[in-house]
Image (cartoon, rainbow, N blue to C red; front, side):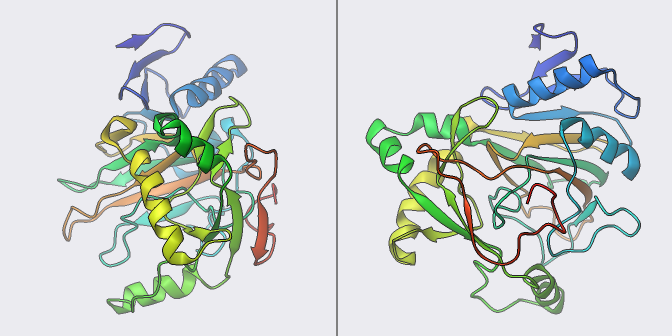
Length: 300
């Protein structure tokens, strides 16, 4: 299906999330009307896909900057050498991020958007799944929506590390990832600053609900999370080398299944600076532990 509301050729990929933009060379400098169109498409479709682009790191960063000011690579993990805005997402065995999450929600101002591009793709598996947290919220029964509107959750980069590392690579990655500890309280339902839509803002870094125990929180978060990951809310992208995608980090979660064995998988990631989430009651997120992460994002 091709959408004709804009001058770009846009093909829906999923029923509720995702569209492929066809015929646009991201390496080229885009006029402002095209840049504005891309921003509008991202707000509408939550995830945009571009085939056969083969960008370098500088071109990738320039494309991502269409959507706003860039962050550095990560609050704790080093960047690609010489590329301060680029993070290597390397599918080394034992340190794969195979769980649903929204990027960097453990700081007060998580990224607005995340862009990935494929450098090395396994022969099978290694897809990226992206879920629409806005339609997930809309699917909640009304009493559960009203309850979720009142909740706040504590997110941390030191969560889910109770089990000992399985190998030396995993232990080193964990040490780097938690070298600065962050804990932030976010609304469970976030009001999108551009569209006004409400979406569930939880995912893999949500440790517990404010005012509840970890055990009580786990059951409630599990129920809410089950709506996010319903198949109808999810789009799956099968990578080929040179592909680029960008998703709205304020309205999505994503997941990279660990289903490609010992094969290599390498993506590069660039993130766009975001603002502090605001809940239904107008209250913004607040930091509980850690610095302001201004080394990572000027939005801090």
